[in-house]
Length: 205
Image 1: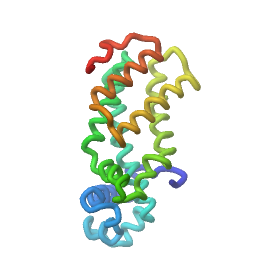
Image 2: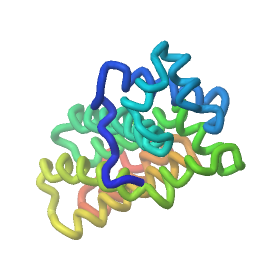
Image 3: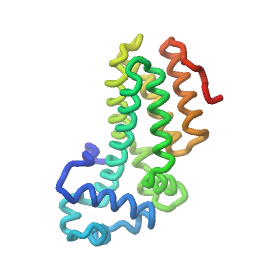
């Protein structure tokens, strides 16, 4: 990936419609069908406008991921806002919200299908080349979790956040349980690490 994920709302007035159209087209027809000319036709702009707003197709793929990441971070922030006095409950709510959003996410469905050969160039954006995505998600969580004044900070807090983020991303790509049960399990782990009681413990078991 490039040096930084592009912000989803940067650029001119056509950037967001182009990214949205690319996501929908990828979900409907597959990533190979996404071309600058086709996006221009769908959005109703010139092909040069698409290039000016997006750049290359590789940059478009990154912009699509950044667009969706912004949606996921928004639901995480909302979950923490709902539980300002209970970190474990905030983690539970955030994980569940992310996984429920992922269940019906068009781009994630398309990327998941890449594992079956549909569009293998998209898959690294959420796997081997996901470093910047992970960095952005962990930075946001670190700031939110620190506000709860957990019993440790620095590297030890980083370990917990890394565990949660990587586990959630793994379940986004290949869920092994329901969003509620997965969130329940991660909240329980977080409670144990933080040395607090999860109330209720393992509510969905």
